Figure (cartoon, helix red, strand yellow):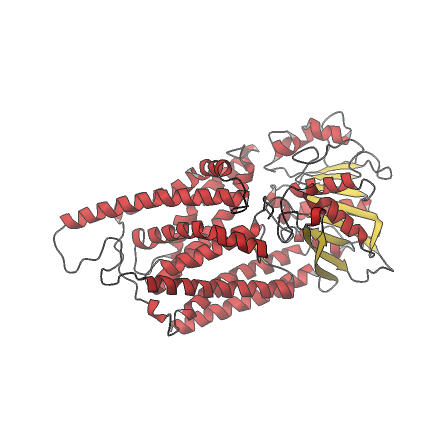
Length: 588
């Protein structure tokens, strides 16, 4: 029965991955009307940059088409920005959807050489199938700074620009004037979390009153959304769009994507007329989301099958009866699990930024912050767990004698842990996650997509990222081992454990955190912690990833009555997910 169940999980996962890949491929290629190529090109100082090149059918050197350089924001990748690229390409534009320097498959470091923007524009202009007199630039957040640097390097190399959730004169971006950049559209959503950084107003709802924006528009008062200022022919046109969404929500907004499509339709010549409302990118999101579900099932199914093999099957055990916390003690433990990770989130992230600057060993800034948060939470959890065990032992000693009492951590004394079991658990984890990794490589090769919903994406690693993965693996393994121990030995209330309960215990605190943050944003126009917009957005990813970790830990604990296999699967997955999706600030 177990073997058939594992086979079913593996088969269902593979089916979801295949169906999702086909759907995403259909959307990304507009039903075969667009060819998508994975390209590499050289940037400054010999750095290799990457991108997805979208080529509409019928475009050639003899029949060139207008081009668009499209760029994602910080700690994202080209796949995050694919929804924009899909709609541009469907309308006849050749699109270079590139990875910024230090992101995705582009060499680091991040922030260097204009974020890779000048090199991206130079590469796009070098293609003989691009009409060099009709090139647009579009970027989200830090991608806006990328295209602004490209425009500064080649002031006559483009015709129009769209800044999505971005601005001139912020970060490393050149200042804007009423004449530069050329034919500018600013798409700044009503609930954008970065209004202070981008346009120097406390609420995105007040962006029209921004004196900085008014200066760029040449306006003497509030900018009127939707009104075109300046002159298209002279290249001084400006327009402000304000979709009803958030900063990361731009990627899932028909209005935000439609605003960019509309502006290029007005400013670039040679595109294919297609209603702005005609958008198919949600199908790509649906397909890659199916891939996510399929990946989780593939890991579970392949791991379950490995546990049925002759050499590794000895790990299988009938779940022991829980001997963890109960009654008020359980609820107190649950409250601690919900509260501590969230209460320590901002302070520990700040410590990580101060203590662990990017280096040759650990070269990713935000990964370092997450690592510090994880390790310090591991220490807190260990101390609290040991206190609980000591209290439980005292209570057990004081209680009347009963037959064959189990240990207070839920592990029967007769079933001692051995190094052999730990080694076998590591082999199962490597096989299960390795099978999931192979499925992603095949998906990437055949369909040019990864597993993702929104900006929560799982990507293959580059050679450099694999080196980082090895460096970060041990700290995240310690975190996963402690989390799995608490779930299985202290908080388990039934023999099999509850995936839903464990998911709530690991991720519920961040669910409440995000409800407070965005409830405040949508009611007042500002986040609850208005000074931490980046870290609030980073926290969005914690919720689905912690739920996946809970699934892995619970499933394998049910099969082995041990924490090791689930913890090792979780640490391999978690380290891979973070390293492949973050920016690299230190160049090797």
